[in-house]
Image 1 (tube, one colour):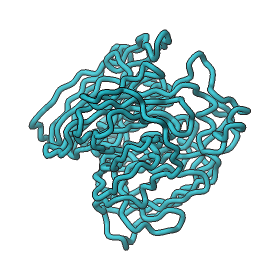
Image 2 (cartoon, helix red, strand yellow):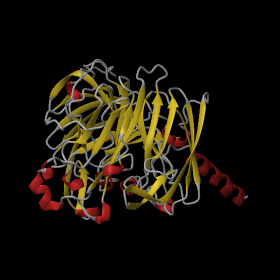
Image 3 (cartoon, rainbow, N blue to C red):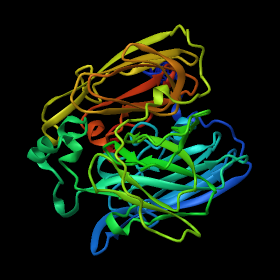
Image 4 (cartoon, helix red, strand yellow):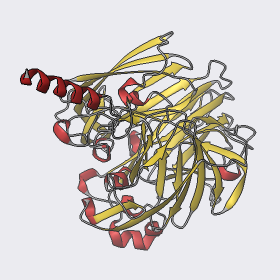
Length: 484
């Protein structure tokens, strides 16, 4: 009789415990699968593997690749298509795929230890989601991403608008490499040429070669276009330093920013800046017979010839001095997410800092003086309007990227923006501050982090966590989950 009483009490206790809410909620992010709609399904297989890659003539590197190339195989679909992507891991280390800029269900976000376990060597994982919004996106590993993206694990994801108005488009993915294990400047060189003062001094000290689509120097493939056609360039920065491009007299319009349409932008030939993780689409009319797109800050380090078919010459136009930088906060028009006077339900101050520490490279990158995973989570409820105040108190750039949401930039350096700016990444330069606001309308656990991935790896990461939602995954552990 006593045994039955003990057994009954045990069952009652277990039953009561099973009904207790989890520490962070009742719903696992694995249940947040979104719509079951599967029309216009497009299937892809992406294999991660090591391969020797010729980055320039006679220069071969040991790269990590998706489907054997750097960048990885381009994925191109139509707006509304359903994607089914099987990741196969043939590397000796675990990997994932994060779909940068995509608004998708949380379990498909590809962040090791947060939304999934990393995919172990010899194993596979299937990502499924709908490409709801046309735009320029990219994909990359979010397992030890500071190392794995650096070795080549990234590629373009293009979602085409079925009513596109341009004649053709090209994708240019920018990156930088440390060939032969040396940097271009070093500390003294950076002090002499001024690069130590531009917010990217740490990256300049670590890399000596710039690339486009996995090629450097004379190996860069020229852009060939038809005379007088309207050409869209989809510019993606997969590196850790901003790129400043000169178009040398060729006029262009910015037509999209982080996948969001920019309307009524005037033609310009100003310098164009692209921060790490950012995507900028520009369009130009192919009128000039030949010209050059080049890096304007690091002299002669990056040059992309552009040739129009039918032209009688392929002489490159003389470089034209241009020092004016295009300001996104003052350019064109974007569809606002919210009315200007929005009262937030929650407000968070995020001070971005750098200090000496026992982390990689002897530096730690902090949010409110803490490093991940000790940084304070941003805890929200579905439907909340969330305002985040970003302030950079360091001497380095911090391109801050929010997963799973678009945000609207309210102000820069205390000045309210006249026109809406809608993005998922904003580069906060030394001494700058931004106010951004987003609606918590996509439940899950979502990273907000610096997309100089070395900074993220050394601490500049936090997580937007929806109340009543928990993650069953853990950092490190038997899967060695390392989101940055």
